[in-house]
Image (cartoon, rainbow, N blue to C red; front, side, top):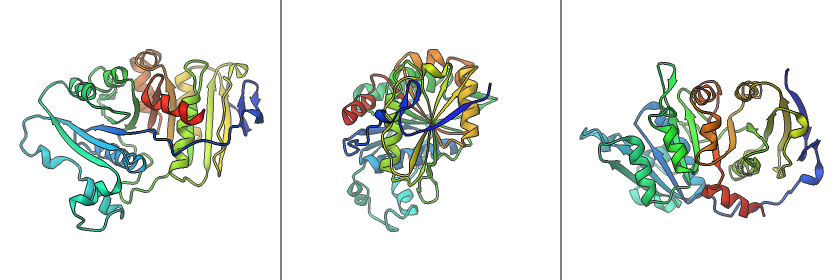
Length: 315
């Protein structure tokens, strides 16, 4: 069965419900203090780097680039240049001194971990350092997503329990590599009764508000009985509309098809923290989402630092 769509100002169990609007949100409340970007210096990682840097500028946060060493002496030189990128984006004038970067409010650190398992390096770093957001590229290898297989991304997402932005290989994402501009017009938010989808709603609204994205559509997708749509509060975002779409059938197919139909620039999902997301999207299901959805995916795990701060900001 195809999708059913309802335009709405607020979202309720039975569809639109204006009483569920909560127009005020404290978007000045700090959500992200530290961003971690594990990189393998690939082209896909450079796209993820652009998104991580833009997020750090927005949050005025710490920004750590982490690479697992292979013994190549030139590896330090391979790190993408933060200052050079900011100059290209027009945020800093050409030939700015190193001191110009921290003056923008971001604290950059480049870390080369000892040659070992990449997952252990990332999780080991997180044991000793606060991380609120992880930004990862998802590389495809022989038809499989290497980052989110058992090798690297899957255990990182599972074990870290923190908000993660995944950028599929071959996708330019929503941050321009040339000038750092942001293009967000359509955001897809799949919802279910559990976990609570409200953190994803809040994260999406906060993102476009902080980025001053002028207009667009939040599409709230529920795969299943229309009467089972969870009760949500849809924050008012000037220029943006909220829309409900319900579908029947396979959940993953529903997400993929709706993302394509809406030309989604970003998919935002609440997840069950350390276990539920990967249990629900295990194995080939995970690969199907990242291989087929033509957009970055932002996972907001239950119990993560970001989820807790989103609750405080919306209370």
